[in-house]
Picture 1 (cartoon, one colour):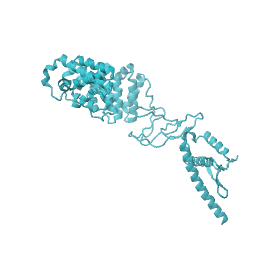
Picture 2: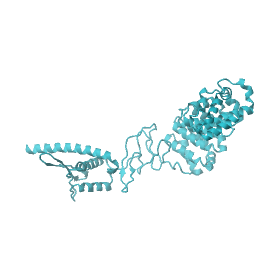
Picture 3: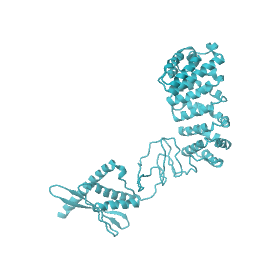
Picture 4: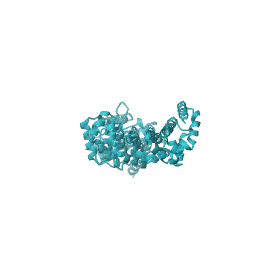
Length: 456
């Protein structure tokens, strides 16, 4: 009975000591995570063994190595309990750890030993090896595939291609720290497997390589590949020589086909690519076929979204010249409604678009006859910053000049009280608001106000 009771006490001590060591280990690791990293590499295993040896671990030279952890409990009488932990790390290999904790740092040393033991046990059961780069519920990047960008941060695949793998530490010894394995919340479709895209998104490609990317975009239904291909084409379309090459390779219809998809991210990337291509006058002649569809989608998509901003930028580029402005005249009321409802960046972009129309005298009658919200007058308040005020003053100045030049002031009866003509010309409210801006603190705004007032 004496030995049975002694064995029971030892077992109870092991359970209590292990629990305490684990708690202390967790607290110590959270306090300074960067300084307490244990890797699964053989080199780090050797460092851990040397650390344990410094705290009093005795190791043998044979196949069987003794590793243990002992806890010292102080009271009226001192007792030492030796704990033997057996680990099977290979064929016929057993490891026992013996460590005696001192008054300070003892629990931490025990935690180290126990953590190393538990980790090796888990590695033995699960097996070491490279993990496949597949994460359920997310798109996975292959090692040679760059991040498509535009989604709130860069993507850096690790050596084995796993997106949730470990990243390189900044320490000189080259230790690695395991990243969180929790799947990020995202609405991206699941990718099963990996696709090695032949190029990086910032590569400057020639005609042959551009043809390959266009073929990939045309044949694939994978939204992940479509996105990467569109970003690659959009980046190359920023160069004038590639703007011609993409058009000559028949790439404009292939890219424009992507604006019909329901995926807002794909539509955004397609708009960006078309926006870069529209700088070329010959490309504009091809893109005009899709301008009405782009306008309709921009007006009905989510307010202030990235898709809406990309669509507005494309429409602004397409209306820099007077050739295709008439294709969008039916959307004037929608433009002014968006000018009132949108956030700061949407207001800036939509005003740039409307200013393009105001610089074409042929569009004046259709522009001033459209219905606009009366709240539009609030844009003349001095609380707005310089860019908003300069744009709205430019818009008013251009319309006022065109009304005079086209002789529309004499035909005021043609315009309703809810029209832009009445708001800017007949109500007199805009003139009062502009005069109030004459004392604005910004000198540039003040000069612009004086210029507008002299033309009234």
